[in-house]
Length: 198
Image 1 (spheres, rainbow, N blue to C red):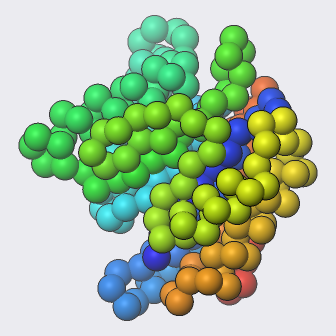
Image 2 (image 1 turned 90 degrees about the vertical axis):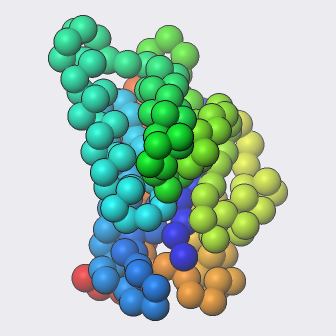
């Protein structure tokens, strides 16, 4: 019952993900961070099969770092999104990754951006996105309350409303969530929303 969602506000992008590692009817852990920091100004929230998610996100993270090391400049968020899309498209015809990605980044020239990339290599630049069973409720809440010029406080409040809706509506709802933000000051963890302890 995974859930990853994100939105773009005024000068920042935010990504939220549940922290449960689940297999069938078993919860293996409740503190799995599914939002990877790609570089100083990029966040990648991923949902999907645990092995595919871990392998693909680490592969992307290392290749983004390799590009920066070789060329002396980081990839833009758009370039990183297109790199991921290309890798998923190539793998789709060989050994597909069952991974859905919400990529958030901040670039000096273009500001904050959010990209929706699913397991069949569909790529869209969006203002808000969600994956997983919780997406039905998160997208509904964001459709109603989201606006492009949101402040950080407004976005956090909306993320908390989405989390509460997911917890109250899903039969088997994830209990813990992590919220991360990327802006001109870089990518960082904002907070955790817990109902169960580690």
